[in-house]
Length: 138
Image (tube, rainbow, N blue to C red; front, side, top):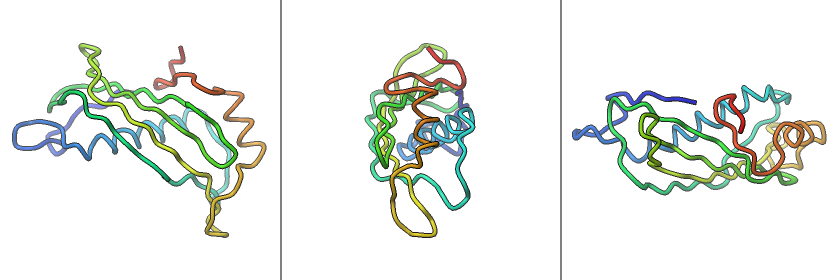
């Protein structure tokens, strides 16, 4: 997916604020779930258990970023996702991150194993290590 960097996402020098990269990673996750049309109820969700981002190069106001989300691992209760954020024009890698999200039952207020149907849906669409890029798989 592509994201245009807005002025409000940068500091006085026009450099993207480091916290915004987590927002870009989140937008990539939500876009992935929309594209997969995952079926689960309002009582079910995924919560972030671990998130990290390695900043490699600064990004700037006015750039268009390309956000790639990769399903690295489908576990019993969790998904591990990798994210690569690039300058769309040059292809230069600006940041890379990893997020572990855990399947969570709101009514029980605890993590649970993913329902078989949901896990199968994830595995059927991607399996481990397949790149997702805004609907363009490679």
